[in-house]
Length: 131
Image (cartoon, rainbow, N blue to C red; front, side, top):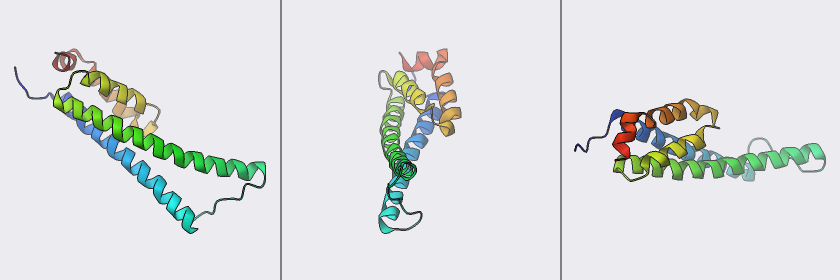
């Protein structure tokens, strides 16, 4: 029995690590924006005095919060999925497919997720990982 990983498994692990790195970049971007807003650099936060400016305020905070939460989830989940794929862990294929399904709503990850789901459901890869 060979311990060499197929090209699809290695490609999935590499792509998952790229998505995990993107998660770190999302967190860094949100933190940089918070720091710049605190220093007063760039577009100032509007004072929530009416409904419109309150919407701007809530929208900006929600957007930054989504970047931090989404980035943390992507970093942890995709990192674990890649580690499991390369380590031959039981349930590695299911973990990776779940991670790819979770990245589908991000338009930039749609082609990666499509490839990941397609390749991990191929019979050859399924047999390799679910042995």
